Image (cartoon, rainbow, N blue to C red; front, side, top):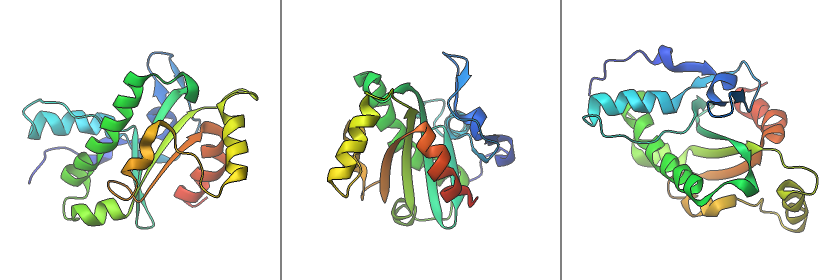
Length: 180
């Protein structure tokens, strides 16, 4: 399948990938690069779906054999509406297709899903907010909470699913993914 696009055009910094047009601000400040998957998805749909749209998450990167799919939500977790949750689910599902069609064309769907992780990064809550509750719950169990029912796609579309605050993403996940 020949798609006429240059993948290098879609490599952007995490700062660019996390830019929220509505608020005109970035959720993450980082020069590490990943594919801006939502923009790439639009182009893939133009060429392979006759303009019918799919949704792509904000960033994609393959690092050390793991396929990282990252969705940035510049909102507090407890303020995310049902409509936004539906969009997150759609992005989680559709992003697999975009990567398979445009970036990793020779990988089997099973191999992609078995080696994929999906992260939703949201704005940090205030001390008494959802993050504080999440920390209390995390201390009580070995499993970290996964918001918005996304655990259902774990083991099906993605090997792991994580919903995490932006500061945790920057402090813990960026070094893990980019090998800092």
